[in-house]
Image (cartoon, rainbow, N blue to C red):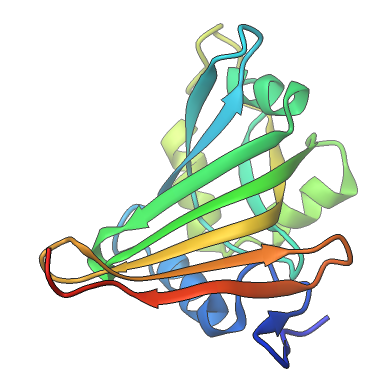
Length: 192
């Protein structure tokens, strides 16, 4: 389903609002700055735990895919506690993103995961594999590649000025029918 805007700032199934979709994909693909993101999930002790991932590719119209090593502890943590928060900051672009999402884990044997890795641009796939080639996780297990799909329920998008202060905040929420609505679009005060 393509992005489309409806009356009142309501968006279709896109994982990010239409005005940001192409821009976000371009930022991640240009690789001029590391696109680190962090998951926050509830651990077994009921305290939030943060796990870092690197965004290499944004794809699929109803979700965001993160290709990752499934032998890493974050895989099981997200699998056991699928309601996560995710945030990232693109310093060169003055753009901060936060979302609440449901996560789905796909192992390397699934067609979905294989397709996700095949669809990733070759340069990104090579960089990811090179970064962990011969590497192991904390338990000494060789990497096995899978993917985590985030299905967002809400987005907070902050634009910062050259001084690092937030200049504009937008908040989008998705209802039960999967329709996005802009619930806040505010330019913040110049006076700080």
